[in-house]
Image 1 (cartoon, one colour):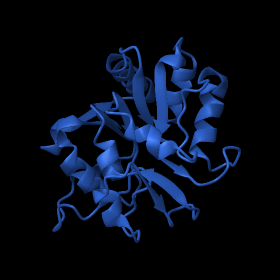
Image 2: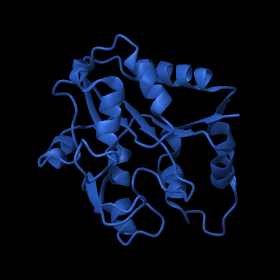
Image 3: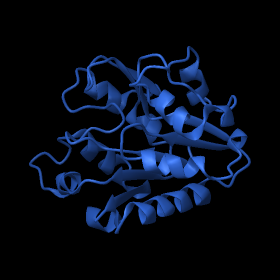
Image 4: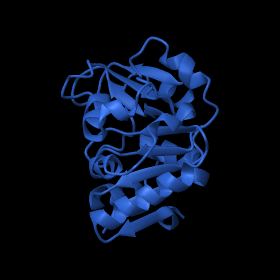
Length: 213
């Protein structure tokens, strides 16, 4: 049952400590591949990471998705995360989804030891939205990345495909809103009506859901 995958925490501090423990447990290799997410939900966790003594040169860091804007733009996930953690700590270990050879770099990664995702009120994750024109490609393409012509805010996006995300050993789905928890737990006539349903179905064996409340 999906409810068995949900771990609820009484407050942000406990949730972020649990996330950090997962991060440390998952990333003990000499070179670790991690996927981070944009959005509001993980920002406090990134602030926690910024205050830890982490050797970021041991990591390959990339994002589940990105708005196709310059890093300096206020909507850039990469720019926001680097401003919190301090981009100087990453050196050359950050794989930008907007760089020309991003696909080649991701293809050469066999698996990700840690993957953090969020979810929207409409059931989207990464930049895979319910009504986007190339939804089936996002689900089924073997390519690691897909271009998304639409979304909110209304700017072009780049997203990992579902098959690329499924290369993760563990996926942490961070949900802080009770309405979102109710959404994923509700019964729908079509069990894969929303992108989040597809993620849960395909990645059930490696999925952990962290929530507040």
